[in-house]
Length: 529
Image (cartoon, rainbow, N blue to C red; front, side):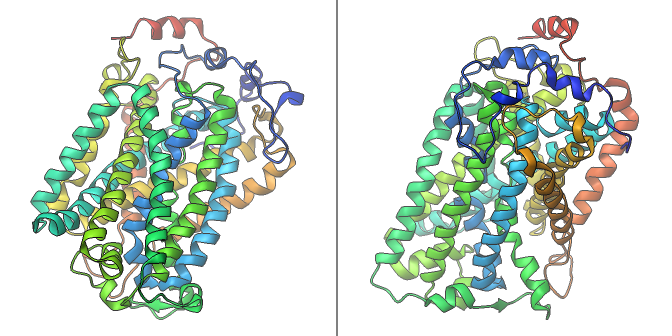
């Protein structure tokens, strides 16, 4: 990576598509419609010919990031982790603090997204602001993070199907049955995404209402049930430490990762920007609004579950393997517990489908710039659906390979999750850092932070550095092969992979087109299935 100042073209590159300053939107002032924005002209100004179907509106762009964050996936899957690592007090206040910092980071990333609304997302921003080596590292971090997210989400969904099947049919989940369910889910998501962005857009819209309805249903049912409820002091003040470490500060830091793991994937709005109308406004708004709504709904969900706990130790040690399922059973009985589990499973299916869409667009964009082996295959777009179908199937195939070791090792799923979070989180901060480094050379798009850009950007970069360190810390004592935190190993592997691929392929094949390049546009137009 280079620490040189941004190339001289960084300033003019936005002059091609940025609205005049007096037409820009600040998130801190009332919004105005910008019907005059020309999405295809803005994309051509970056050197890319429009290929994908631009059928997604502002709500759809918000919906895909909201679906990927999916509080009914991350918040539910990691609920037991939170109970063991700090308990209710850390879960609630950690959610508040991490949510606030994620919103600030998301606003800073949204500002850069408004200036660079392409499917490449983070790596393309890094390229224009810092050069190809920055882009290469950012791209590989982001790509493996997205592919790891598909594996983590869909495998987590398969794990939730186990308790449901046990309650419904008395089936005992095994690693073999779980991997088969996981493969079926991947196949479903591949087929849905191959059908085109219109169907993905509809499913994401349903997902928003399903998640919000699900939170209201779960919390409302648990609240109104004639069962004992925990006190306010318990929910907001009870501390529990089952990690083996003695320091409350250390344990609280680890406990905050429940929220940090959940708040991943909002860059999906950026990756779908080439399929979004008024993308320079809609994509940044999608990022910010998805975080804000997830923050609020997630707080309600966590509080509702914590108030409903009947037996703390029994919930943690549940035979279902899913602590929220045990809460449902204790409070509502088996019948209603199955219904609520089904609500959660469907939400997780929506989440995995949205993540597949985001990852496939990253594969498509990275291949469009020659970064992947066999790039000419993965960048192809269907004439019929205007969807990168080969990129879709590559995404779900890699996700299957990443999760296969779970058949043989219980720590493999943790390693897959580590690939997700440790790849995506640092990648979020790189464009923000490079935007700060560019200074006045950076020309903001229509959605901007104004004078708040620099202080919020500095705060965001520091936050990500601290969070990345915490991600890599040991999470249980004593440290064994099963309790080892593989996040640091995953980060090292990704960085080594990025370096090796840059030396062997990137320096030769990776090429982002010149701004507004007619030759590149013509070449792209001829490479459609």
